[in-house]
Length: 317
Image 1 (cartoon, one colour):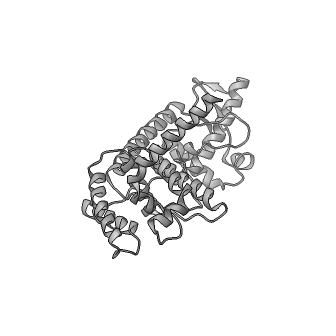
Image 2 (cartoon, one colour; image 1 turned 135 degrees about the vertical axis):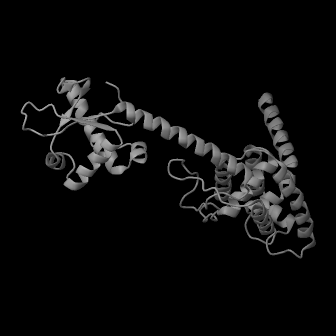
């Protein structure tokens, strides 16, 4: 007997989320329970006709014994909807001619076809979403401390914004302006803004593919570095702008590993760097780290030197 991995064989009324998404919650509950009884009949060798195992029951008994949380009308409509979708087959194998009790079995082949078609469509949509995220600069859903770190694909979905090229460029400019803070008249910031224009041109021309997982990895590294510096202090919430800046940081540095390295360096040396840069804000931000990407060469050099020194010490021991 052919089975679908979307259905359980256990006695409890369990339900696969994929099945509920595929055909709807009520139909998934009924189909799963029908599968349960079919499995029992298959093990016992009962009610096998025309190449299928069958279950027979009245609507009233379905309600009493299986679905006390549904009304009879709901159960009747659900079976009718499953039959219309050709997911179940009904028959009459009653010995008495006057007995009109319906018999039910599952069309596993139809269910398998629906599942495969659903997966193909989901894969196409996911591929299109990744392509859109690579093209648009600010298409990231808002992230808050309650939903971070990380977003699981089965709970959260990437919201791809409907933006024209002009609107996207305008949003990019707003984010770059946001990186500068409230000190636009400072000569150092003017110089930094000029650099930011070059960075923006680099980002727009760069075809480096950055995924949501990459940006979440940067956010996780930022949160971990924040905790090391401030211990139990509340971490700042990240929104669309911050996730866009994390994406820019990855594209500028080419890899997530280098982005994490720069984050760790700035946080680990924050008191000295804050005084050196005369940074007015009290805390480091992802926007500040984006402005300081030119430090990555120095940071990597220091890391290599530290690793070499540690290696020499180990050899002398």
